[in-house]
Amino acid sequence: MRIERLPVLRLPVLGPLAVRAGLAALPVVSLGLLCPVPSLVIALRRGGRADWGAFGVFSAVLVAWVLELALTPETTHGMAFADDTLLILLSMAGASVHAWTVWPRRMGRPGYR
Image 1 (cartoon, rainbow, N blue to C red):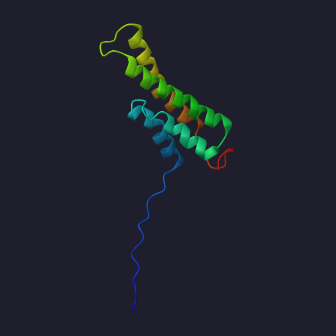
Image 2 (cartoon, rainbow, N blue to C red):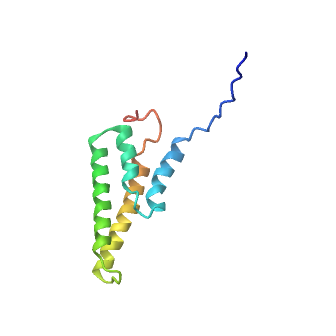
Image 3 (cartoon, one colour):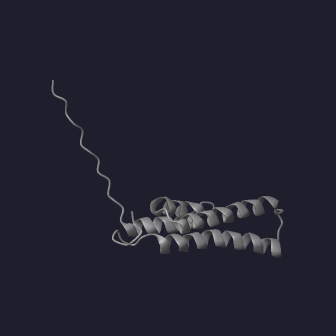
């Protein structure tokens, strides 16, 4: 009895630019709710203290944003609204800029594993 193999489905390998763009777009698309994810991926990939520190900072920003959201009344204006807006912008823009600038641009670069 002969067993036939099924054809292997080969997925295209994403290039470094696509990975960088995806990681940078993730915090913006999620409106800041997934801001620690790019820095977690970078920290797991490279493993440096600064990378883990960035993950801690973006996690703290997310916790502060969620707490601020939970404690702020629905009808906000003035400084309470400015605090919410600042935390949202920091979690979106900061995480996106971090993911775009820190991710290795090519495999031969130091720190790439």
